[in-house]
Length: 251
Image (cartoon, rainbow, N blue to C red; front, top):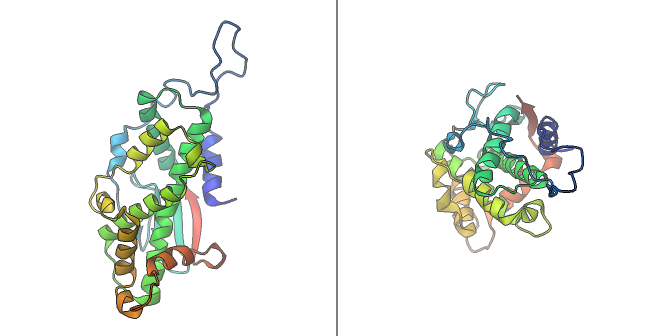
């Protein structure tokens, strides 16, 4: 079981999303698994999560010092470490659901689970991108630009999300109104660096920016070829079978 699947299972095991176990009376309409109104009324306001703090660096505490820190990537020391912060991710998920319910009150339990999966995997992909950057700096050199790297990491979340937009994928099965509400909220970043991801939303622009950041000499090295260094790095460096990072779930 992957770290994402483990975290999703942990969070769902503590959430009483299900309604009554008794069947509805004959004069009551079936609830079709719709979440109860007000289930997450104690969630933080969604605005809190629009401002993010840097999540890649040489070290991080075992307990997040900010609710907006959803995951971190700690640079390779042998090895690197991807951490997912369960409590903060759960709080953000509840905020996303509560905000969406205000505009679309027919969110089912299954769709709520899909939103959680989308959030956890998006955070995980963000941290894996930081690993790609760390690995590339050690492989071919290059410098660290914290704010620019955060913009590219969010843009990678967006590229990954687009790859999930298939009718038979969990993302494609989500109700389109809910999906629109959640995605708009997740990618409404306001903090420096993070908010610039839109400059790299188009795939070719993203690949060009990633190549220039990870391997500035690539244009000269691969002159006369059609080799796409960014596409190669993103597809091959985060190799689960030959990786230089560990993973952990923190409170």
